[in-house]
Every structure is written in C-alpha cells, then in structure tokens.
Length: 275
Image 1 (cartoon, rainbow, N blue to C red):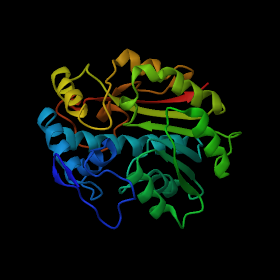
Image 2 (cartoon, rainbow, N blue to C red; image 1 turned 135 degrees about the vertical axis):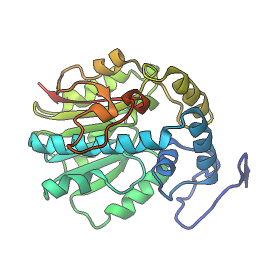
Image 3 (cartoon, rainbow, N blue to C red; image 1 turned 120 degrees about the vertical axis):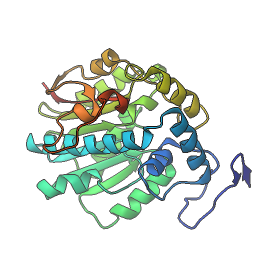
Image 4 (cartoon, one colour; image 1 turned 90 degrees about the vertical axis):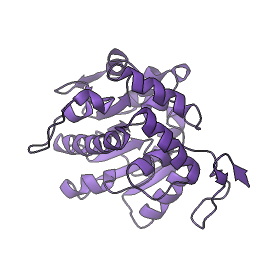
C-alpha cells in the first residue's frame, strides 16, 4: 500500500486498521518530543510544521513542562484524581507518573481517540490498577463521562483535575468549545481544577497561519484562539495566578532558565479551580 510519503509502514505494534500514511497530531507531537511511535507521514508533516514554526520542538517541551507544573499545583490543592482529555501517545512524564511522586494513590483516566495512542497507553497501563485509557472523543462529554464513571477509578463526589493540555486547538468552532468545557465543568464538584493550553494567533500570527495550513493536510486541522476566547473557556472556574499566559510564564519553577521571548511559545496556558 502506497501513500504520498512512500510505502506505508506496517510493524508489529501498529493496531489493525491504522492508516499509517495519514498523519495524526498525536504522532506528530510524539515525534517533536523525540518519541518513537510515529510514521514516515507523521515525520514528513512534522518537518513542514517545523518550517512554519521553527520553535516547534521547544514549544512541545514547554507544553509538557506546563502539564507537569499544572498537575503538581492541583496535587497541592488536594486533587488526587485526574481526567486527561486528549492524552496522546505515552512518553516520559505521563500524568500518573507526575502525580504519584507526590501522591502515590493518585488515579488517572486517560482519554484519546487515536488508535496508536490508545494501543500504547493500554500496554503502559495494563498492570496499573489506578490508571486506564478510554478510546473516546473528548468533544462528546456524555460518552466520555459515562465511560469514565464506568471505570470505577474516579469518584465524582470528590475533586477531579480536568486536563485539556495541548489539545483544544483541535476542537473546531462548530463543536461548541465552550459548551464542551462547560459539560465537563458541570460534572465535577467545587474544588476540581481545569488545566488548559492551546495555540493562539495572538503571539506569532505569521507562524500560526503557517501551522494552520500545514495541519490541513492531517487528520487533525487546527483552530487557534485568541487570548479572550481561551480565557472564556475557564467560565465557572477561578483562574489562579498568573492567569492565562504564555507557557513559560505559568508559575515557572525556581531556577528554570529564562526564555528570551515568551511569545515564541505560541501557546496560552492557565489553570482554574471550580467555584
């Protein structure tokens, strides 16, 4: 079988039915982070992505670092269970690994619809009684929340950390982004948290326009949002300091290297607590 990138790869770990010639955002992100669960089509797309945004690898690392800081902040706020929406392909520094360094009893339900991400998450978590992966579309909160309750891992009478990190820019306007977030917000109790990051055109408009064009060739087109639109997604949450800011400015760790220009991160991020 052929694709625009040559012979389609087929290896023993590829789930049946996966079209390895059609690039995906999850596998592109894996490649940018230095992972090995990607195919020629993903790598070719990533190279075009890097032409549009030369800082892409650094942005991927900054986004992963924000995830870590956000999870630890929620742990400090007493959260011990997480629903990670659009969790992607497992790489070093998954949510359950981060959380359990501070809270060994932390429970995590990962959610993704991409076959490779789900297959590798299942392998990673098969011997972990406190974490699992669901193959669902995060833009269908009813299905996701029903499946999450069915795992028995999350107690919806206690605070839950909702994680939407580096994924919401794949939700098109017609899917009612604010309504999607609100459905998850309404399903959790006060004291729950939301950590969200997403690409914006506010910081580097030319580079973002290039990324949007590149991602039209994948199964995951991108929809950047303004700072105001991203802030509006936190409706019903008290946004913690320093607010919705470029990735490296969200509670940088002491001793972290300064960034020459935070706008080069290309992504706004924030954490809110349900009122």
